[in-house]
Length: 126
Image 1 (spheres, one colour):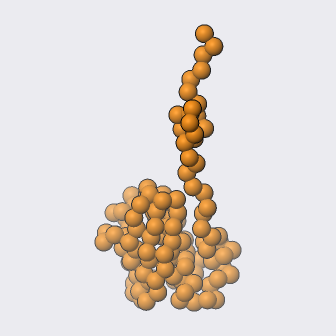
Image 2 (cartoon, rainbow, N blue to C red):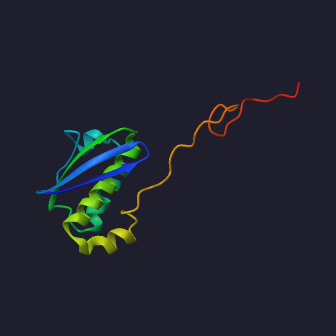
Image 3 (cartoon, one colour):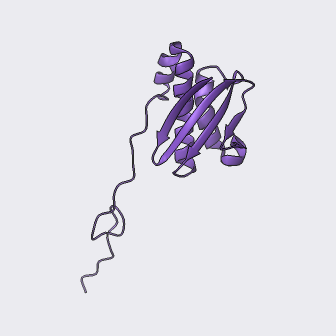
């Protein structure tokens, strides 16, 4: 059993890889129940596809914080790191696919005198 954690935006995921049939569980539910959108599901499975380990491991993920896209990215990074812990030979293909790099983008802070980070209030000369 391999454990790893991953993060994206405000989401943090703890991922366990257990030898099994390829089932993915997120917070006690199946991955399809937790992430209803297709692109997020393929994003989560991407690390397993690159490592050619789709049917070999069961993935058990506990994720909290953030929204659905951030949680999917956090799980993806966690799976990639856990696969790397299982087999160090996978570093090169996972790195080439960009799966070992944590996405550094964060929400920009709101500025005073603005509605949001960059949007100002409506201005009228008269």
